[in-house]
Amino acid sequence: MRTTDPAMRAETTLRWDRTIDRALVHRNSVAEVLLTDLIRLDQTELLVAAQWPRSHRVYRPDRYGRHDPMLLLESIRQTGLAVSHYAFGVGYDQQSLMRDVGFVLDQRSEPRALLSSTNLAITVGCRDLIMRGDQLRGMTIELSFSADGLPFATGHGTVRWISSQSYTALRARSGIRLDWDQLRWSSVIPTRRASSVRAAEDVLLSRKAGLGSRRRLVVPLDHPVYFDHPLDHAPGMLLIDAAWQAVAEQRGDGARLVACTLDCSVFTELGVDTDIVLRQVSSDTTEFAVQQQGRQTASGSLRAAS
Picture 1 (cartoon, rainbow, N blue to C red):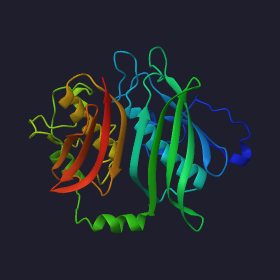
Picture 2 (picture 1 turned 45 degrees about the horizontal axis):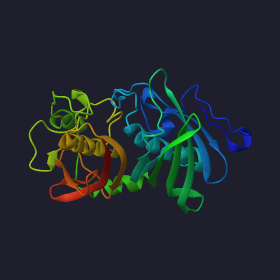
Picture 3 (picture 1 turned 90 degrees about the vertical axis):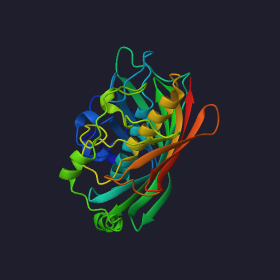
Picture 4 (picture 1 turned 180 degrees about the vertical axis):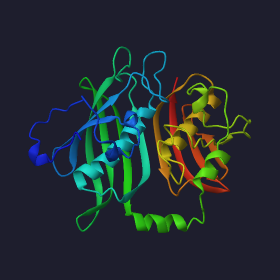
C-alpha cells in the first residue's frame, strides 16, 4: 500500500509508479483505482497523486485528446474516501455517505491524453470537520488539480461516516427489501444506441423518448464500472453521468461539461422507476433533479461549453 504515517514520510515528492490500496477508495477492481500516493502535510492538508489513463472503459477522451471531465468527479470521490481512512483513521467497518460533489474545469490549461497517461498532483484541504471524540464523522474536502505544474481544475466534496449498524437501520426505514439476484435481471434495460458522450453499452437513458425534459434512467446493475461492486442504491457517479448524457442529448451540439454540482439529499433506490428532469436556466447551464415516485432524491447543475 503506497501510504505511510506522516512521521515516517519526510519527503513531499509524489509518486505515480503504482496505485494505492483499492480498499482505501472502495473499489473492487484495481483497474478502477486512480490514486497513486498520499502525503499528509499537517492535520488538515494533504498532497494526493492520481493518474488518469489515456483511455478509460467508460470515460474516454474526445477527438482532441481531452480527458473526460467525469474523471474529475471520480478522483474527488476516491480522494474523500482515501483521506478519511488514511489521514483520520476511519475504519473499514464504517459506511460512507457522499452528500455533495462538484468541480470547475479550465479548458485553457487542462492536460491532454495524447501519448501517455496523465500524472496529476492534487492539493487537498479538509474543512468543517465533524468529530465524535477522536472519530471522524464528516468533512468537506476542497481540491486543486494540476498537471505538469499547471493548475487546471478545482473541486469539492462532502462525505459523512456512520457505523454499519446505523447504516442498516437507516436503510431499513426506506421500506425497500432488495433481492440482488432478482433485481440484477429485472432492472437492466438494454440500450443499443450510442450517445454523443457514451458508447452504447454505457448509455444510462432509456431508448424510449422522454416527455419534454424528463428522461427515464437506466440502472445497469451488471455494469463493471458504475457497479464495480454490489450496492443497495444508485451511486452518485451514475446519477450525474446520466444527467450529463441527458443534457448532451438535448443540446445536440457536441458541448463539453466544464462545471457541475450534485447534492444527494436521500438515497436513490434501486428497482424503482427513476427520472432525470432538466431545467435550462441559461445558455450554458442546466439544472437537473432526480425523481422517484414524485419525490426528489438528488439535484444539481451542469455547465457546458461548446
